[in-house]
Image (cartoon, rainbow, N blue to C red; front, side):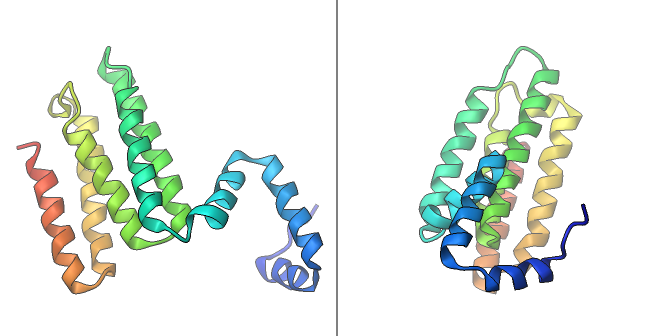
Length: 161
């Protein structure tokens, strides 16, 4: 089966009736959990981005609390899983401020994690790589907000010194 292009899909959706569109969305939601989560965001949470960010931050904090602390192998595995989940939530929103808020919160949680990530190069690299990426992302926001985020990034970076 040949996959249609986005343009072809858009054209076909424009020609569909409302009831057909609803049926297609529900059919899509049944196949993949991520699709259902995206629809949930678009329908219920997109209108209140601040609450969405707070909820994601709470989930990240809970996930950090659930990480297996027995050795650094399990810690690294857990941190990567949390970061992947955070980036999925960011993809739903597509807003730069949301990305900054969520990843900076992730980095703050990682910096305050016990046992300290100072003893593990892989965790330090994840931490530093995300902060460097956030410095690049701050260039996309307004200048006044940009300064606040840069100060916050430096504050988080100083948590490990």
